[in-house]
Image 1 (cartoon, protein in one colour):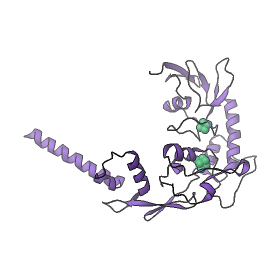
Image 2 (cartoon, helix red, strand yellow):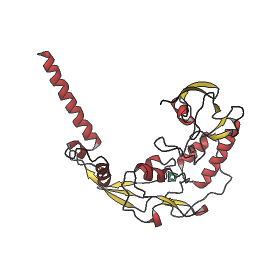
Image 3 (tube, helix red, strand yellow):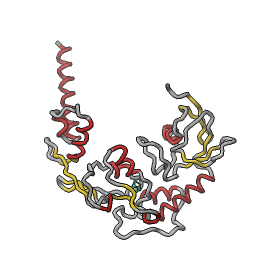
Image 4 (cartoon, protein in one colour):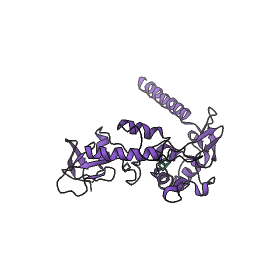
Length: 273
Ligand code: SF4
Ligand code: FES
């Protein structure tokens, strides 16, 4: 059954939404910026970084400041994304993150946007940090690796102050698919990969390496073979003889465009007769 249509107020402006929809999604859909570090639409809301906080303005609601990535909309909900209270909390969080991830340019940029130029907390520099002192421990990379890619390569290591994200015992992993999903979702740009010839190296994960497939048309290395095998094992009905699967995205596009043009030309000829 489809959810009920409702109206919500964001910063005093009325918007249509569906009951139960996440407030962050409603805001984004309507072009309202709410900073978010650990939110990823394809995963269940988690509420780890608290950067997406908003203030609820409705009477009788106990929790006034809450995370918009976990807040489900109801009819008449009224929130403010940048109230004084929200900005106070958000600036404090940014100071904490500046100390936690002192090398992250993305955190610095966000801090600047909110007028936070430095932190009052002690910066945590770690020697030879595989995540370049840029990790805020939001856990997004771990969740994507586990819940979307089903690989489970990385996790939280250690406790308290010493908590880190990496492969078990900081060792190379046999499970890594080289998909780079962790690096794509990381909000602080902490995770590094590099491609060298036919090898992709997960620099942040103890230089774990995977082989890349070569494009049959242009010879460029483009996708990890292990990832291809994993996709085959899930989509077992995938056509293994389809020549397109051995082509890089650019060449694939060229071949498809050529085929479409050919079909169109044939059609034109057919109708011209
Ligand atoms: S590496 Fe990035 S995604 Fe992973 S926990 Fe750290 S900040 Fe979050
Ligand atoms: S984005 Fe909402 S808590 Fe992190």
